[in-house]
Length: 106
Image 1 (cartoon, rainbow, N blue to C red):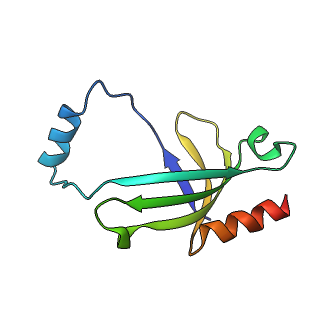
Image 2 (cartoon, rainbow, N blue to C red; image 1 turned 180 degrees about the vertical axis):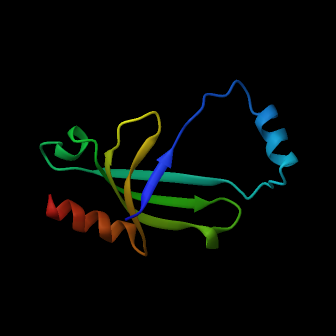
């Protein structure tokens, strides 16, 4: 079973975090634009139960060959200070076709 564990922080600016990342050896890898489409049942059962089914298209600005699309299932969050949940993800080759299939399924 795959898990996603996430924590987010509010930053007061980019300069200091970028300086620290460079000091650790991090380098700029490029800009990615994401388009996320969430799917749910008509009764919004997934959202109400804190689950999600998402199609994500991630387009690389500098290198289109690095663009990719994925289908992701996110289970319920576990209690606690971190965002911790079951997650399954697979790459897809035709986001438009998959969105049509999911729409037909309701």
